[in-house]
Length: 326
Ligand code: NAP
Image (cartoon, rainbow, N blue to C red; front, side):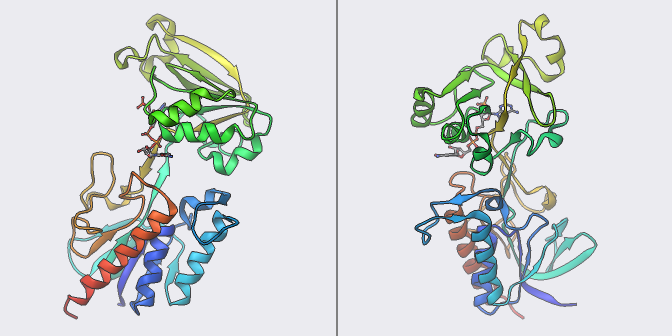
């Protein structure tokens, strides 16, 4: 059975840059790209901050260019999801559904995915009034009234971006203070089109799909101990809260991201939030397994930083391979 030099799991900027570097170094590279190949940039429209494109570029087009460049030097692709790994012995085993792939080294670049509120029928409303990406979908909400859920930098950024299109943007935050950096809070709070509903959560989508409104719960105050737990939302008034409905054209959910590490099922060390732990540059807790991009970087989360980390992981993997026997 063929043993690859490097298997790269993920095909966003980190994975495809790693593929480019390793393939160009004449290694035998297979990229397990996933069913949603291309990563989060496939969900964006204009990318204006990727260097080298002074007029900007569409996210999917940029990812196609990354992929073409990696392919030009011999990277092979499988557009299916990695379903499991075995790093307990070498060569390592990568499971892609019922197919087993053997490899001498691995680069994990499986990225992160936006969190959803996990309310009833949420999936049915996706793309029909509910979104996790203002840059992708904001333009559909021209002259509209929208809600943005969350209190971190992402929520502020999404709300500010949406003011380009919408008439009114209401940030819905479950506590009475934001988590976002002061400068982002100030920008949002000072914007004439932005309002805030404090101590409030969306508990139900109404009227569709497509969405026509949202049911909300207002907690008695922002202190966590007085936040009404989900199982008591139906009896909010008994807990000092209030349930009310608002009409809205869209709800943008900006409550953070979760790293895509579930398929690793305990084979590598993760931090408390599920991100891969890396030590000494891009090395994970297993020798010969490296990591790049949003799967371990929860701070910068930019296409250009992910690409840089992909380059670093590829160089680290190549260096490590060159010191192995066989
Ligand atoms: P975050 O900082 O973790 O904030 C998530 C927000 O969503 C919090 O306010 C949280 O409420 C709320 N939330 C979480 N789960 C919720 C739920 N189920 N229902 C309602 N609300 C919920 O995530 P982020 O804003 O995506 O930022 C992630 C990192 O990227 C941060 O380090 C941030 O600084 C960085 N970032 C930077 C920029 C920038 O500088 N331009 C832009 C975007 C992101 P609580 O506050 O009550 O926990």
